[in-house]
Image 1 (cartoon, rainbow, N blue to C red):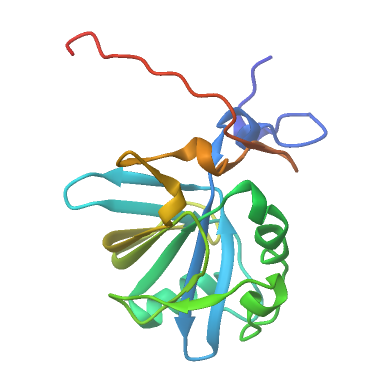
Image 2: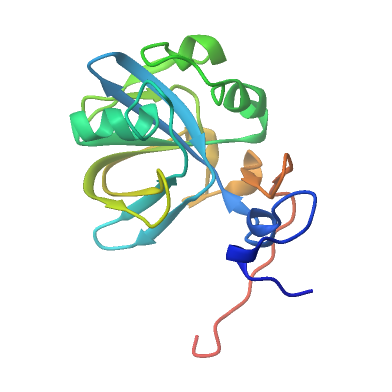
Length: 200
């Protein structure tokens, strides 16, 4: 099969995000004039080591947020956001926070998760996650298409839960990080193997 996206795929559901998978989930928390917000984004990843930087993309809008979603609207106000790493045990809370709530409704309460103040930025984070990355916005990029917005941020603070460290290594096998596949499908990391680069 071959198709051009502008012509349509002819399938029951768009295969694009299932093809680009698995994708890590950035559980993004923000604070704005209307209050605190928490929402998962599967267009998320790390993009640089020094200084450490991450990105996530928002791809639709809400009628009460002028062409975007709560997360982007609020980080445009504050200039900061926090990435909370999702573990398998928090899958239901993460999913609950994806509900389409009115601007100003607090997903922390809806999801039933602990709200903790960040250290380097004025922003909440989810208490008890395996890790959280406090970020200052470096760029907000308008992408082609309606309401497609990429946000880049420099990591200014890193929280790591003590039991996620093993012999000085961040041990992803200790908590089973979640990833998005496509459609309504997710997965968690359950198998680990190492490969040495040819020049190592």
